[in-house]
Length: 228
Ligand code: APR
Image (cartoon, rainbow, N blue to C red; front, top):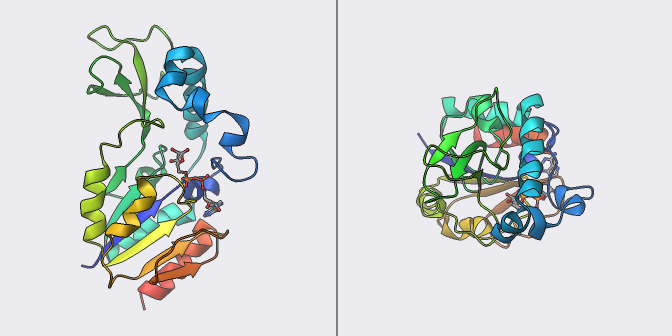
């Protein structure tokens, strides 16, 4: 089976009701990145940071995968589908996708601030992480999120996947955050790259085929083209 590698960003989940970051009204208009998405922000005001992610986790409890997520799962019938997502929600998994690599962490996981290596599932019955919530070794728990200024441990794995792509697809990302946006540079020169986004996204690569549509409609158009 051909390997279909898909890089997704916040726009993938927009039609499920999850806010994007950089669109008008997006999360970074309402919150300062430095305050809620950096290790310094967490050191200065852990309550604020934990509350920010608690709210996002609560929102995740009430949203559902959209047609786009569902169709990507459906494509596993015809392709070896590998999803690389910048999203911290679990809507690809809820839709039934089998291979999802989270570059920027996962909302439904917590991590020990001790070694930073112990990762725990957040239980649906207790979805808040609060100051004073500790791991079994006694360290404060933090969201399992890659903050600005932190390493992206899954990037090496993402490169290996991107290098093997027979078709590469980019959905709903402004391609402004590195190293994620740099993955396109690891895609082999002969490989077609589809870009699904309702807005202009600056991607300089001669193989790009733009589908200027939202995720759900755009994935349907993609299916028409690649299932021909
Ligand atoms: N369908 C597809 N794309 C959409 C839709 C939609 N319905 N609505 C908006 N978009 C597009 C926007 O046009 C934009 O290009 O989604 C993109 C969202 O871009 P960003 O808000 O910058 O999100 P993303 O690229 O995922 O951000 C990358 O930045 O803050 C960090 O860690 C966070 O993972 C995130 C990273």
